[in-house]
Length: 486
Image 1 (cartoon, rainbow, N blue to C red):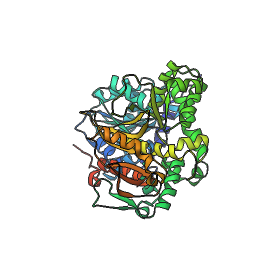
Image 2: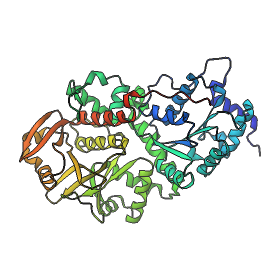
Image 3: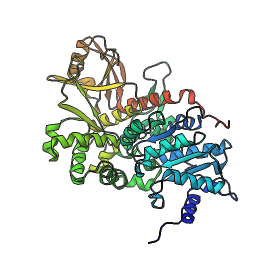
């Protein structure tokens, strides 16, 4: 039987690293695509040689991890790092199957006669396809302290779990979620056209220049806007169902999760996910999910962990009207991490679709994936509910509350605010006004039953969340760092 030759492997490495060519300018893919707001922090971690760790970039499929790696390579070359000092390897490529990371690094060293003290940059894309990758990567970090190793992977929690167990002190984990609504507007060059800044309002510093076109783009965002490739490709936008379902959802459900966790009944997992996707933004229970999907409750608990691991869903715990958590979590809410997944499975939605309420709630929760600063819950009791409650870490008391609507009706039918009144009255330390999202109405001066309310369109609130959270990642648009050559 023939084995893949060293010559063929080297040829593939040269093909995957076109910036090694001496007769042409450095060629790097995706030069024409805009950079995500996460790029500066990610790149600065790569070039920071004071920390002897590998950088592990995690996140769901098709959110731009590989593109961000190529942008980092472009930036290194622009900062006068020799192209021959940069190696990119996609471990999803069949020719690398069975090769250890160390063997690949040794081939790189041979090609350019690098030694162990050179300042090299090595990028391993889709590293989860290598068995025991975390052991190999930790060994490389220890063996070559002058090299900077960067890895990406799609099954985020599996990567994080293994990095925490086997790579303690050797890996720095970064998570790249889907696009925020603010990033989506920036990528389609409509941010300045549809949103204006209100510097005098510190909490909600943005408003819509015209709410109708902003809402139209918000609906596009719900249908396909969480994925950069869908934003840039007209063919994908015309048929996002095929792209999102086949290339993202099915690959995770049918390949990634079964291979990582040894799942034998793939159809069972698929039924559960379909049930969860249809109920995004709604309260569910283990009992109800078991009846709807036909999956045993103990299996559901395990599958929920796997689906969260792959960044397909997120669970939100319930509190009562006094903001007290339940000792035994029987009911909880489930949100798709990207609302576009529901549209891919069950059809695209319009402004008046029945699913707009739950998808609006899903989209707003998805903006919070970009923040690690807030503990979010929902409140429900016999006579009322509040969609979004923040508890302070120190006291576990409610800090603020939001009721999410895709409707202007509560602005006139004030009785629909009674649940929020009850919650605010029972928790007097919670800051006011209570926020109510709407379809089109903005009003910061509503008082009902001695409780202050502020109405803001859901699209504006989603934009504000993303812009504010990502603004904290890049204060004053912090510039990328010059790589250290020392």
